[in-house]
Image: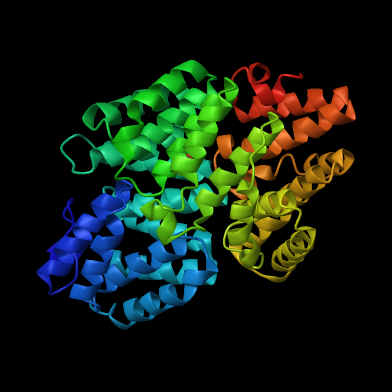
Length: 444
Ligand SMILES: [Fe+2]
């Protein structure tokens, strides 16, 4: 029997497995790339550890690709087989994996909630819960949970920095910027290299239009994130958002090639089609082209990995980005195939994501394609009726903003002042401070 850093039971007879799992939890919560090798070590040391297999399965499904479902299923089968004698808490992880695999994602979240009700310092449950709810678009739910467990956390609890970073991001996405900043600064004081804390602060600065401060801050810090998982690419994306506001396009392209889509970089080489990387890359290329920059053959590089995945309904926000990429690369047949697959999934399944595809990802994907075709009336026809529902595609306000920028561009090109004014009202309600000061909305 082992324990994690906060004393929660890990049922295994192997000290090596327990040690490796404990290290994997800490590394995963800190968004460090080494988490994966700790996991492999743990599973190799004890393939009969139900908790380890459940964690492995949930992490594999967390990569949001159908390519890893078979491996996740094997982990689930192993976890089920060896879960009779483990703690109630560990059984909840096995259940969470079963629900996630079946597409009952809200039920999986309820399992993490049940764990946290009994074990409020179970950091892994909190990380999984926030991640799942983030991609379900439900940041109100995750904020509620992090608030409930907050009284149990303090500087004496291992992993406190990771907790603070989670809490800060919950506050930020609920537009409680001042509180979020206070919490994330506490995290960064304890660990200046904390990736998730830095990420929360990058969001706060963007939402508050603190562009020059954002550039300076990211310039100074970026070398601290070299050990991070793909979050280091996502932080580079945040860096570029600030740079774009100051027309620093050459620097954006350099960061794009070196840190966002560098196929020679170890993480990108190992998994060139990770969903968040494709979102980062495509939304930046779109912004660069909007600014009149020639992005060369970069769309092609993205399209090569997106095109084989038009039937992959693992994540609504990613599918909406596939539309952006394939349309930009003028693969309109593949766009049709993607939309057909999304429509079929949205209508025929009781998967928790089906509703999100129907309400949000489909209008967003169709709008991205219409925009590329110059059908600006079509863009507005897709997005305007969906305006209350677009959050369902998942992702942050900063990420979802891409589709509002598409909408704004089409409204401007249509010369529709009323549509533009209505849209600016929507953007302000989302929480962006002074949106008209930003390039995408300057025409307001
Ligand atoms: Fe972000």
